[in-house]
Image (tube, rainbow, N blue to C red; front, side, top):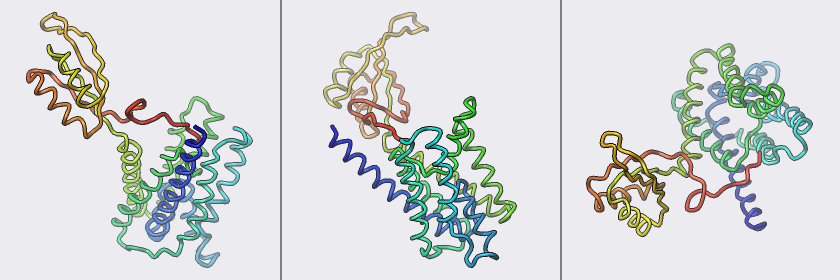
Length: 293
């Protein structure tokens, strides 16, 4: 068991390294060159770099601002939540500064702001999705939101994050104009969709409710041909006031076609309801994980 946990930890750190590197490329190759403030500490860093161009040659580097802002946040987190708080997130945050440094020489891939918002959003979403799948974060506004929520219990972390990121994104209007900010919003939307696809799509399943007078035959065929568990429920048809047997079964995306075929062959008159399931934990599906932030 300890060996499995160690191996899983190494895989998680590999996800963090790859994900953070992809994020850094998105920031340096797409967002920063076209002044797109996409929220978070990196959004603040883009603003600071733009404002400091006249004072410092090339502006204050993104990696430096990211580190300077996150250090006090993590110190506060350790004081308020203990020394074991967020080891993976600490690693991801400071590796992001390192990645921003060594990818700052990545060439600007396009000067078309629409293309930059689309491809930057996709890359940022892939990177963050990998980081989140390793049960980590990159510090910044999510860490700040966690600290604020620690003091203001009645407000959710997600709500605080939304407020903080919205302030950062729309402050870009003051410094870079409305157009760049609107494209930044497009990029954030794309990133969120890509993150959802990575976190939920990898474990996407289907749930089926089957109402049939041949419920035993259908259940036996599902269990034997798909090797999936089936739960039998007893309901009542309100129109006929008669008892009805309902089967409940969760299968993978690939298995849903076979399940419908089994039902059709067993009882062509069966009533079947199929719905999406975002996540299934347990035997035959996704294993329970140890969450550490």
